[in-house]
Amino acid sequence: MERTNGRVAEWAASLPIEQIPRVLNYLSARLLSEAGDNPSTKRKSADAPEPPPEVAQRHAPEAGHRPGLLRCAEVCSRVGVRRVTIWRMVKRGEFPKPVPLRDSSRAIRWREGDVTAWIAARRSAA
Image 1 (cartoon, rainbow, N blue to C red):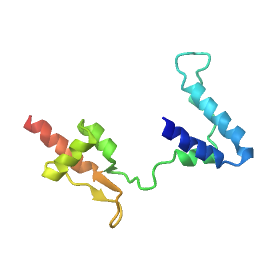
Image 2: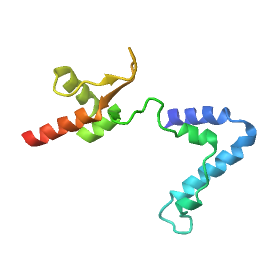
Image 3: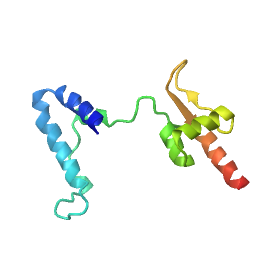
Image 4: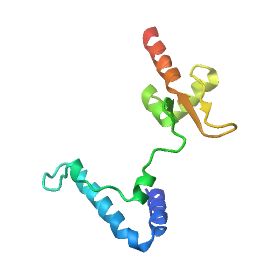
């Protein structure tokens, strides 16, 4: 948590002073709308304010995200194993290999079709 707070503090420190109240209003409205248990603080999604551009950009989809490609965390949740197990299975040739997003890139993804086919093959073999 301490690491996350440091990143948030850096991000907040980079905001121009005149934008801070707008960002705080948006974040507090989000917290109130997600409070769910208390009907007096629960807000309808239509009542929620639009996020300031600084916040919207921070929560935008990843630049390298492409439809049909899965990140390691998504693969792990679909398969039901940890990251290290995925990599061990890839090394042994028991799981589809990931594809790089760019030439000689460290950013990789798994094809959704390959993962789905692997899951289906495991289910039919069981």
